[in-house]
Amino acid sequence: MTRTVTVSDQNGTEALAGKLAALAKPGDVILMHGTLGMGKSAFCRAYIRALANNPHEEVPSPTFTLVQIYELDPIPVWHFDLYRLSDPEEIHELDIEDAFADGVSLIEWPDRLEYLTPENRLDIHIEPGSTIDARVFQLLPHGADWQKRIENLDEVTS
Image (cartoon, rainbow, N blue to C red; front, side, top):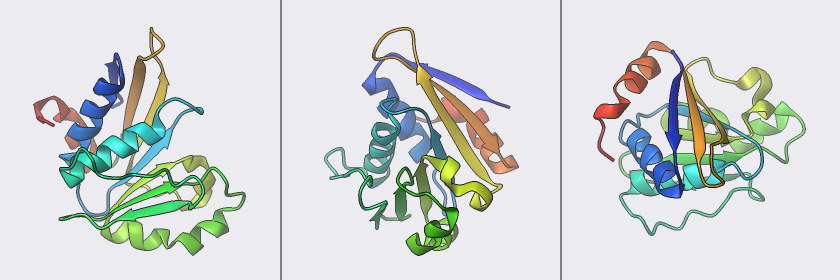
């Protein structure tokens, strides 16, 4: 079941990210889809800050490093930006299997994963909303656990 969440601005994006971070479990994989400028990095930054319980946590974009790792308590977060990769084999060099096993993986440009895309995951598609700052988030759960968490999203306070 796809879940649609519409937000009017950056604060709405941060609130949604906070709600999803409150549901985080080791082994979570969240794939961020959207064109340049849709807010994939902003969502990931807000998610990491919410999980760290620190609104001032420094969260640089992994555009050039390809991955940033945050050793948060209780769950480490691996933030991947795969935009610059041309071959899925390059992903192994980023230790993505460790991320999939032990932490939360936030992955921008997940189309680069190809055959490495995990079956149990949450796909988030971000599209423009009705105003310049608004966004529409399509949450597509893959796996029964994700489905249950998405169904109960409204009950979560970020």
